[in-house]
Amino acid sequence: MESGAAALGGVPAEHDHHHEHHGPPEANQSSRVEAQFLGMLLFIISEVMLFGAFFTAYFFVRVVGDAAWPAEGDHLPVVIAGVNTAILISSSFTMHWALEGARNENRAALRVGLLTTALLGLTFLVIQINEYVHIGFAPADHAQGTIFYGLTGLHGAHVFVGLTLLTFATIRAFRGHFTAKEHRGVEVPGIYWHFVDVMWIVVYATIYIL
Amino acid sequence: MVNPLGSEQEAFRFLLWVAGLVAVVVAVVLIVRAL
Image (cartoon, rainbow over all chains, first blue to last red; front, side):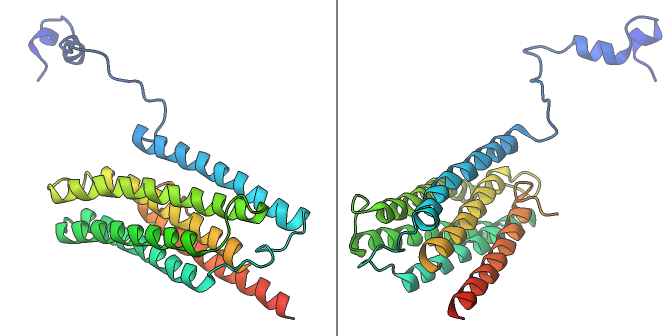
């Protein structure tokens, strides 16, 4: 049945509805991607380029400069960093578990998954700081040292940012936020965390192994 | 094709894919160096 106005030959119902709208007009959305996702996508793309600049310096020194890696007399703790790599990769599994918990309304999995991810990430950072303390060379010693601290430090800064996001997500999870339909606050940090882990796999392989 | 920026699930699958690829590349390089 039509509305009274339309039935009387006046303004159709849908126009009538628009006429009742108050406040500012809805924001224009020119993309099919949600603004929150788009922001994270653009941020991660810019991060890939940032890491690319650091890797360019690394390959320039090793390939073009034909410098020894690591510098003569230095030693990189490959095994300890390998264990640290396993810790970080396992944190991606717990992050994925937390997201599955959110999707399936399993609040315990969501909370424990997020908390475990944050603790594993924190463990990674503590081990890396301990590595800096005992590694025996400084960034200013040689180009290899500059690149080593630059790349691993850049990555460590990203872990710190990821931990900050995870802390907020964990607090919200324990406060009862997030549902099977609305869990963007976990999903976006999850994408970022997996990106950080992907970058570490590449950093570990190039800096420590190859 | 996996879009790592599409969702957390795809990002996770991309991570596993990269881990496998890097493991293969590292293994090949180390074997070639040893020969």
